[in-house]
Length: 180
Image 1: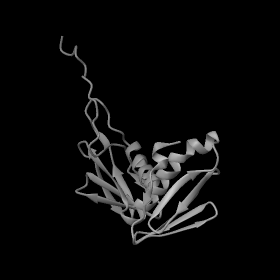
Image 2: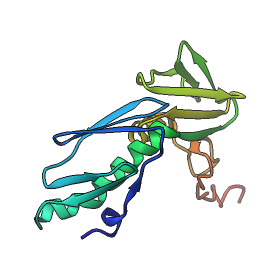
Image 3: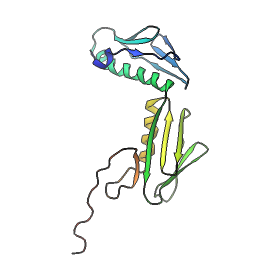
Image 4: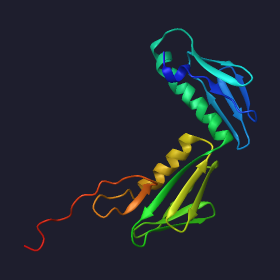
């Protein structure tokens, strides 16, 4: 049994949750999310709580117990509060801008890189070097942020590139024998 899977999920009052077979749908002020539960996982729903349970003691059901609970908890968090990831651009001449909801990055290539976000994702740019990715699905927000970061990951010598806010990049020494 999973310790995380045993935890009860508390529902805020402004959400509507529906269970149709193995499909759970959560509606909230920010939007609607739905997910299909894996085989061997069942939900016990009350007015204000959800309890994730396994059907039997199969190995796959035990493996997916905590994961299913976390995914449902993230759905509830997303439709009530939303998720965000912040990125920073460091480097001389590196900048970003928004054009018709598309993110345009100028990060040292001979061309600009255009990233088109999915429908339920919003990208904001503050002062050309700070990017914020907003959305209700934690998985998609993380994937879009990872895609943006992968266009120019931070390099270890000068620290130039796109990094997550608060990310520490271990720096390396340059050429030590220069000038002898």
